[in-house]
Image (cartoon, rainbow, N blue to C red; front, side, top):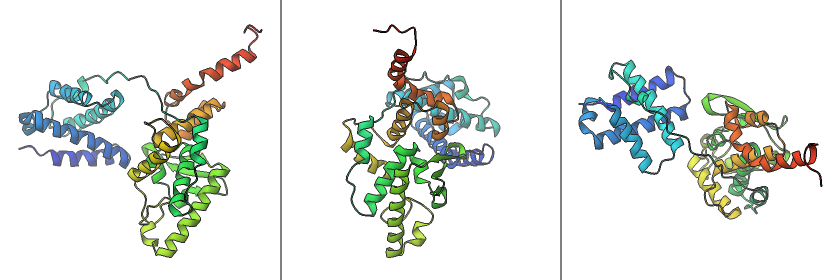
Length: 307
């Protein structure tokens, strides 16, 4: 009888020890593989019992994902997880070939980043927040998202030691277990300081020191706030400041990058602040600046017909 749980547990250890992947990446890969195992159990029980998967069955899973509305980029990410999983099964002698290696990555869809206009961003940050702990925290989170372009997981993971007000910088623990430094604007720093003062007062008043630990952003119980809670909170504010329905915490990251590039920021500098390993990833934000480039060309190039 198949023992997929034991195999998945071994794969988890392999990802951590042999490949040195971050905890969040490990969790994502294992989730993808568990989804596949569940699909095989329901669709191909004999293959599930034998732990032998054909290329057709592997392809059937990708078709299943597409029919369930998953985007091409997400399917590609899951396929990457499964290719690694197949390589591991080869390594431990459970498979003789990796059927996932025979499948091509799906063609990437045209990417369109959802982002706020500068006016919408200004409206979001000018919101009349409640004059209490939660209001100060929410304002500080929104300021950091838009002011530094950090990811949701990165914001949740910020500790007190990561913030250096004297240098006006913040240390971010990003993808791949890498740290990077991002600047902290004066307005953002002031709002963050106000929140930290309220955080300290709340911890002392309610004796929450053991629960709070080193986490910067806390929930009402004094523990590190979860990504799901932050996403829900930010979504509520975004719905009040824009008519766009698909905005999220990542939209503030898009807004950060887009507004910097439109203002003339260097692409490589934006790449470093976003924590992208490849400049190509950052370039997806540059399409929004075409109008600005044409405007500059009109004003500056001698070959443009002057009226």
